[in-house]
Length: 298
Image (cartoon, rainbow, N blue to C red; front, side, top):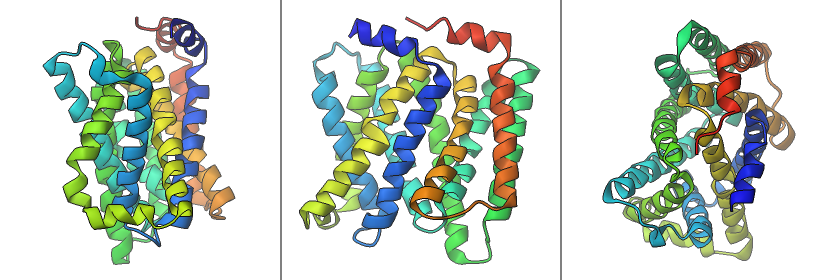
């Protein structure tokens, strides 16, 4: 485990985010294409959470750790943030395009970067990222339809849940309990949300081997694989820099959307992505950030 941790500490944070983003949005594309017409988005999100929880609990065995009640409570809050974020996000992408939804969702991380950042440089970069998000969502989304308005509301809700995940997750990761808290939190959240989803809806995941395979793929690609990678980044970076590096995600989601869903970005989306890339570059080349990234928390 120590060798794996030393190896992960040598991987640049942007590379971690690229891999995490490709994994997450590939799983979202699978959900959009094959699962949303068979079960509700909330049910798909529950299967995503549950599959990931089972995998991570088997790997980490968090219930055998000597965690305090406060740490267990924090893990539960983390799991609830993730569950709510996933369910609102899937409700959103069932109504509006994936790339547009991801861009709007960034209202949460940008707010974290804006209010938790240190110095004017981080704040300027956060504002620039916010301009990029506004450009993508403002031109790329037609809010004249009820479906688009509901999708917009779910995207914003998912963004604020994402902000909560960043803040709570960073504190747990900095304390050295990120991976265990993630596994425990997801497991608890999966149990707590069963009444919300309903057993009859959950049973739809067992209708055929193909549906179950897609549910497992979504759980692995969207949560079990990328979230531990994000915990590695959260352990090394503060919530402000994490949020700004996460602004790479809209570009990655657009790439997946173009390939898997055959949606080409418009002018507003391209301009927005350029603004976000500039914000990320601006933040990356600040000396304070480089020093923090090269000195991981133990």
